[in-house]
Image (cartoon, rainbow, N blue to C red; front, side, top):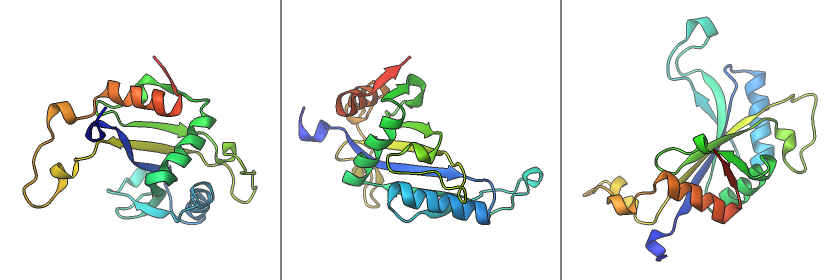
Length: 169
């Protein structure tokens, strides 16, 4: 495979949706900071939902974006929690995939803290090939050719080869 056809991890986004601001959100941010060893940012609601008591632009979650070697190291730790098994429906048509981690204490070295409680998280992985900047650049953006796009099967084979993950149908 040539260097331009090689698939790589563009980014890994780790998200905890709390649904409310305040102390619970601060605890979720603390969990993300501990697990990823990075500073988390708050996510805001896009619309108001009166039944849930959520207003527009209200902080309701936290996330961390990881790139490069840091992303790959975190992904290895997170997949180990899932016993290196992912369901096939976790993959989208562009090869990206997502999965959940039920409890932060499943990560190696994390202990349960009664002050924090139990928090699960979502892990979303975006895959890309070199040259995708062509579609995103400001001057003369161009579409990506069909043979250069990542398909679902490409994403599945990348994860199997790179991380030894078993994809369950």
